[in-house]
Length: 265
Ligand SMILES: [Zn+2]
Image (cartoon, rainbow, N blue to C red; front, side):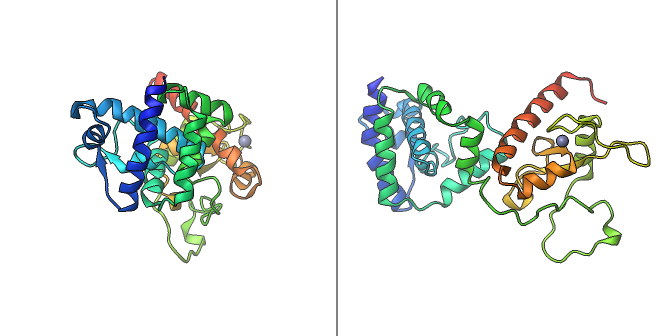
């Protein structure tokens, strides 16, 4: 499918010029610039998706995603629709805030050449053969490499009377924590081990926000995992933390899918 590639090659400099001027295009305007009827917005969105695949391959933020918008000047609601909302937002925000350099535009162009013969539909699965999709999403979201300022912040929050805290604290919904602990059923949601038995008979697990609240991670069940204390420290401080994070995202997704099949309780 070289047609999509050809149009992406023509659209890239148009998008780059708009982005540099701090302007946006709509899918309709982009269609006109490509010599297509205005009602070809959907086809243009696919060309933009191929350009985003090229940006991902070039390891730069997604230029087309936040430069070419709907008539209401919103990011295409279909883009990344199957991605965890907090990661989708992080991908969009990082791309929005980014000032693209000439070198980055050239890198997208070169990556596009590597995708010649692919359509947006086949390009992403190809990218997934080079890097797991979860890791790719985290890279596009700009997380997994940041130093965590709220490391081990979950510890001690159940006994606020005996801790002092200076600085910004993020509100945590105790219902989310309780629901995650229920979901875990006493077993670490990362390694599957039973938590040690507490004096009150419950199993000890710690709740970890996979995307830190400080990084705009959501205080929701889809972003919280119940894990062993050792793994909690490792995911904050360990060399493998970005790998563990990716695994945790997959495990929480699976746990949530399983929960959806069970009666509430
Ligand atoms: Zn564990």
